[in-house]
Image (cartoon, rainbow, N blue to C red; front, side, top):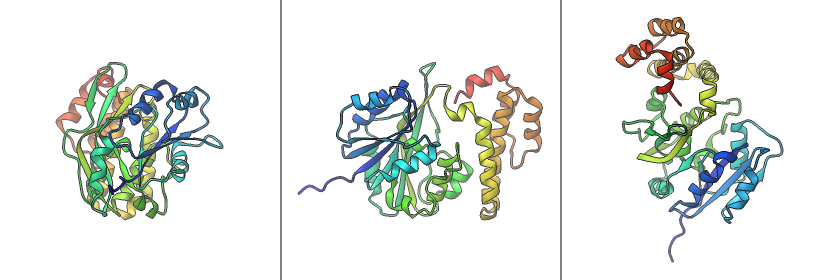
Length: 297
């Protein structure tokens, strides 16, 4: 008798996501890996999200209405509690999966020490219809804490998590965060399990101007600073330099995009762990109007 493939729980958190929701859900129906369930967590939407979900009739799709609207990471934790799969994955209501995503990823869990499989990611500009890959170099594999704290590139919509390791975490998604809950979660997972990577895109992130990371860049910076304050004592010098460099680079970009040249100049010359490169010199000199076309997500 043929062994049944493991069940994958796909968490779709939605709050007023009707504009792109139908396309997102159809990308799940197109998966070549068939043994999955969709946990659709309706975070008290007031648009047609429920109607769109119900129109895509599929026994694998399960609808849950939140008792009250909550922040994203609280909603994710609540949705996961409703899931049954051996593996957990995520798709936001405005993004897409490519058809072979799960078929490529699930076989990499043969080693029980592998707790997360992730991949490269395509960024899609909804205005210009252009796509670009989010990182060109190979993604790290194995025990990758040191690598991703210095250069974080784990896109949550590309990930599959073995439930066993998720449950081992004392804290699931940290509900205090609005922006960096993914970063915090995958860093903690990278301390207790191995990661494997698909060196090609398996998902598409849609940049449409209303993405939280775009409209509130400074909020993300403040959360990174708070994370560093709490975790500083647990980091070695290299790790500390890596996260300080990340924070200052984000500040540098934020100041340039918002025409605060003197602030950007200050970061450029005296920012902690901020190494000067040709790329950063060009960013400093390029007018903000042009820079906004480059940093569109």
